[in-house]
Amino acid sequence: EVVGFAQSWHGMTGAAASPLSRADLARTRRFEASAPFLFDRMVVTAARDRDAFVELAGSDASERIGVVSNGVALDVPVRAEPAAPPIVLFSGKMSYHANDAGAHLLASAIMPRVWRSHASARLIIAGKDPSLSLRELSRDPRVEVTGFVNDLPSLIRRAAVAIAPLPYAVG
Image 1 (cartoon, rainbow, N blue to C red):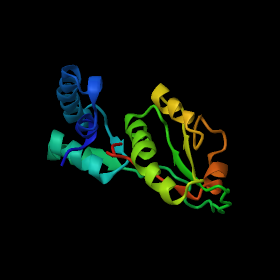
Image 2 (cartoon, one colour; image 1 turned 180 degrees about the horizontal axis):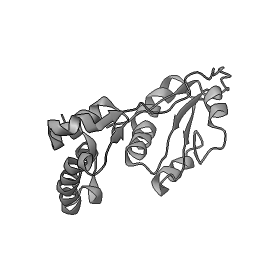
Image 3 (cartoon, rainbow, N blue to C red; image 1 turned 90 degrees about the vertical axis):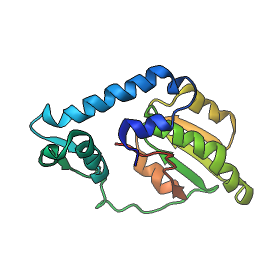
Image 4 (tube, rainbow, N blue to C red; image 1 turned 180 degrees about the vertical axis):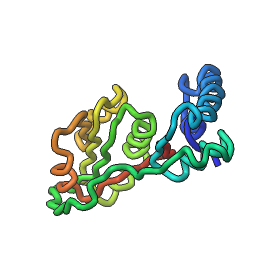
């Protein structure tokens, strides 16, 4: 199984997949193998990431790495107030490579299928620091790229569906 930076490297195209980034992959693997021993304790957000570090660093690293799930306020009730026309929402830090790739996948491959059966649906890509290529998606009047949103829970309540179309998941 491919995990961590290696997984994101496999998702890169064009200049991002250059020989330099291949060298970064080797250097990153060496660092990731040593990371558990640079600190008293290391915390990751998924068991799969812990397992990948242990695979790279050896079984001695196992006791040094803890898993703490992503912090999402699951105890806060969210009452849906869907907007008309329906909103498809993708939110996250858009400068993060996996979110950028997911947003492009959503706009280019998934939403055309949605629009075939729900022509009035709107796509909102919400999150800090979207790339120029993401911002350009707003040229389509059905697509809004917001950048940072002060009140994400309100936006989530208005969405018919919140989606995370990540072609690879790391972190």
